[in-house]
Amino acid sequence: MKGQSQIRNALWVLVALAMWVPLSAAQLQIGDNLKMNVNGTVGFGYGGSFSDPGASGHSLNMLGQGLVTGSYYDPKFLNFTVQPYYNRDQSNSASQSIFNASGVTANANLFSGSHFPGFVGYGKNFNNTGEFGVPGTAGLTTRGSGQTFSVGWSEFLPNLPSATASFSNTSDDFSVLGAEGDIHSRTRLFNLNSNYNFHGFEIQGYFNRQSLGLDTPAFLGNSNSFSSSSSNNYGVMVSHPLPMSGYFTTSWSRTGYSNEGDSGSNSGHTSTTSTTATITPTNKLNLSGEIRYTDNLSGALQQRLLNGGGGTEPIILIGGGESHSFGTSAFANYALGKGFMLHGRVSHQSQYFAGQTHDLTQYGGTVSYNYSKPLFGMLYFSFGMVDNAQETGNTGLSFVGNVGIQKRLGRWETSADFSYAQNVQTLIAIYTTNAISYGGFIRRKTSDYSYWSATYRGTHSGLQQDKGSSSLSNMYSSTFGWRRYTFTGNYTKSNGRTLLTAAGFVNPTPLPGNIAENLILFNGNAYSVGAGASPLRRMSVTFNFTRAHSDMLSTALQSFNDSDRYYTRLDYNLRKLVLRAGYSRAYQSISGAAAPPTTVNTYFFSVSRWFDVF
Image 1 (cartoon, rainbow, N blue to C red):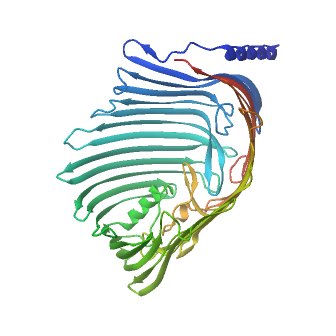
Image 2 (image 1 turned 180 degrees about the horizontal axis):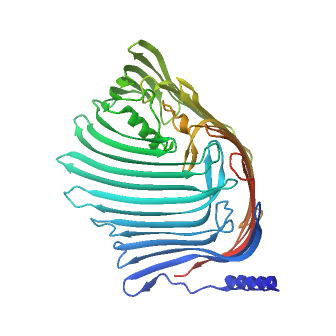
Image 3 (image 1 turned 135 degrees about the horizontal axis):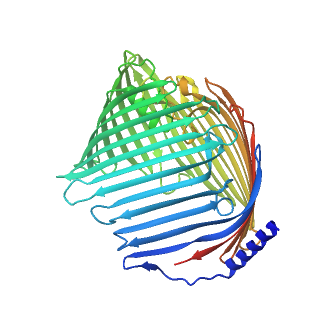
């Protein structure tokens, strides 16, 4: 009887939604100063889930999302936007969500267009579905909640230095399906900037503070760990125009950092001073030069890793101890005409670390072609060589090259590109990198109603002096379309070294140093197939399947990870009514986690209606 009553109530709600056409007003005004517009979607849905391990259940729920915009007194004085949502799962979300998510985002702008504009923002979500990144494969499904708060203010008074300050605080707590324990991440950012024009000199000053925190359980080849880091960066930059359409810039910056983790802690600071100048004597010739000094290479390397998204664990420069660097460089670019450019460069670096001084001189040239019309109707390219010389003598040539081809042959559309850089200098003078990137695209219109396309992309990079630092990735994809039907397939494979961050595992730029404490070796692959159709007007049907496998190996443990995902959905729009139905299945197995494989199945049906309330 209870189930019949729920069905009866649902039918009455459906009739009410279909027949209710509210009186619409352009805008609601409350009192003399508050004005608002409100619209959104309201509906009901029936759905359920069953998990292994876990319980099963089903329910009839209300769902909806809204958009509230408005202003007080005047939009330039105060304007605001609020977007709440409730039970936003597959039934009313474009994402392939498994769980019913709820939350709100809001922001307000104060004194827009005045000398003192400001803003405030807030967001919070519950029971949200996310993805924990794994290099080269589909990410692992996560479930969690988070919130963010941001505030900012500016001062733009005429003939006085400007000032802009902003602060944001973000925290997330989530778990990975198939793994025990939660991941907690925290990020705090504070930025202060000022600009001033004094008799033609553009002066800019800044201060930035960043605080990061990450707590992870033992899984995916990484032991249970915590890490926290903070950095302060401040500096000043002055620039001024030069004759011959030139510009002169000098800058100084200082960064202090501290890191704490399971493997220990470290802290330090680094300062960098640089001066650059550029002039254009003729329409075809451009000249530029730079002088740079860094008083702590270890600190510069540390900041490169942190700012590159590599992680928060300490990285120790080989040899350690005192280190510094001084370098100069000069560049020339000359337009040969017809799209051809000649680029020349010479640079010298003197670096001290590990108790030794290392000198490196590089000089060479590059020829490039880039024109509105490709060479021979299809070709873009640049290539060149750079000679390397150290205190021990000549160390060989560096090669750089890029080539791209685009050509249409009848019904065939083709393109390909290749980029190669060998023996290219890195932050540390005696370390060089090799990098290759290549790919292609082909598309053919098989008939007036169908087409086929295929894409390939590959990359390979690493330090020449450290063969174990290389990473490799390959991606293949293909699509076939016929009338209202499309079919897709994708395959990816990658391997290399990775580091754990709050967003998942990422591939850092190869850097010299000993990072064995937080290094994770990975090897992963994934493939997916999908189909989409529009059999009727205003109706769409989609299906996707993804399977991924990855191996993770660290000094702590080894983990073999498998993930399967199925997702299918039907959408049908009938005037302002939206009918949706779907099914999803997620399976994850993580051998390095102290938990059995997990499977979550969900299904749903929903009816919703869009309203423009006022």
